[in-house]
Picture 1: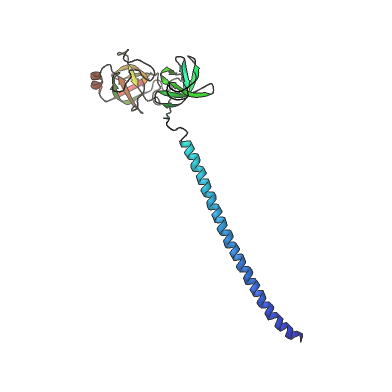
Picture 2: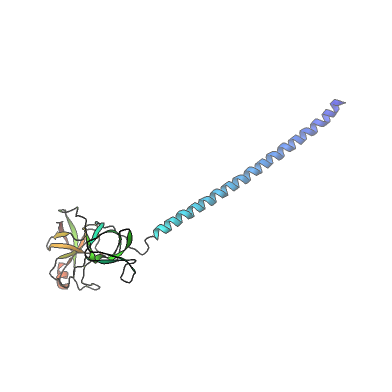
Amino acid sequence: MLNKSMKKLFPESFKNSKSVLFFTTFTLMIAFVVATIFSTTANEQASKNEAKEVASKSYNYANRFANESIQTVAAKKYKTTASLNLRKGAGTKYKKILAIPKGKSVTYISKKGSWYKVSYKGKKGYVSSKYLKSTKKVSNAGRSFYVTSTAYTAYCSGCSGRTATGINLRANPSKKVIAVDPRVIPLGSKVYVQGYGTAIAGDTGGAIRGNRIDVFKSSKKAALNWGRRTVKITIL
């Protein structure tokens, strides 16, 4: 009697066990798929957020110097040649921050036109480059090399007749001045130019980049006669 009951019970129990096993396995599979999808979605969202953060930082960095021409020059330290105002922007229309006395040292940061952004006693602002003199010694004194040379006058289109360092060329037509790239030849340097003589590196120019100079001539005819030529120069 017991055996008959067991025969009836065990097949049914076995069936139930198979059903439970199948249901459990199926449930675990669904749970695994859901967990995988959730994990993938979370990782993708995290990656998107990270990318946005990196892009935002790059954008902010790129705009930190918006509308400001950044140039690396040989001399990072300058002394004021007169009392001048430190202003919030590159121009006299901008508010004055403070007055820097004559003979004080300022640290160069960047350039915008003829105005230099400098640091003085923890304050940052713009000053006219006309009243600054390089204090860094010329490390390449005695160095000779070849440059491409052109010429200009004090009366060219758009010229004020005054150099970047404040030399009045119209008042000094016989003065020997050259425009240089300050990254190659520091402003204020004395330079011997083949066929021209000893000149002062007292000016800059938008097209003067690298191993190129512009020699000052008192007249347009003299400038045209100079033309474009390769000359040897020596920094004295």
